[in-house]
Image (tube, rainbow, N blue to C red; front, side, top):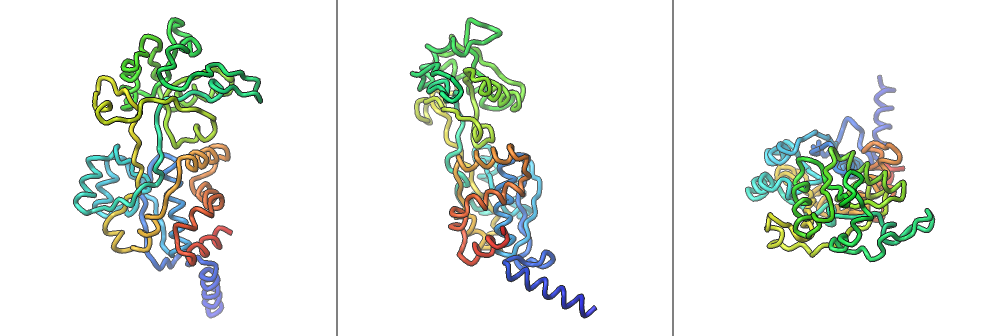
Length: 333
């Protein structure tokens, strides 16, 4: 028994020396992250969780939370941290918990999220390595599509081009249809609505692999845009008045707020973690690359989080004090 106690004590001491607390004794307590079914938030949860675990001595826990329940759960303190709050998608519930002081918005996770219309870059610039010549060298804006509609000819209706839109039930399906009309493109393009995200991304990937023209809608961050070289088509800049003309939407999509939100109870209990999360910020390109790596290597969220921390050491070490960074780096090794 004495030998066991001595061994356990030595093991615990060694773990503390390398910056990790023994799994059974996390000095800071538990941190509950709101997990959801898409890869970016699951990975961000585990990036932050890894840092909290090995740098600060907290035990992360990942709780699945559906869109309708996550903000109320934060308001109650059942969930501590929500690493990707797409504010516009949660606006009513978000306002309810933030404006009543039950939650704090700590700012953007990635401030440059995007959605809009795009084409493969080789359509405009060509791709000499693949033997592809420029097909539409003057294609720059959505209005230029009128003269290039034949390039994107709809195989089901050769009299028009095919614009590949977003999937049924998503708000962007309606918006894209009205944009086509508002830009005067409905005379030149059919509004094609794929049955699923897999069908939408699959159509883009299939065209890209063959070097064929493709035009449609997508968003980022996604693994698809981390793998494919695509060019957004310019639209008039977002204008609230134009956007609120619900019959046209004749401007760019508004930028989307993707913020980190924490419960007030958590903020009072762990102010040092709040300071860390205030500093936590990534970029759209980092997220695209992260998701592409995840797809290419079939990595789990945990494995991708470690990859991110090793790849972007210069970034995340600015989020935390030097002593915390040292502990996390030791754990990564």
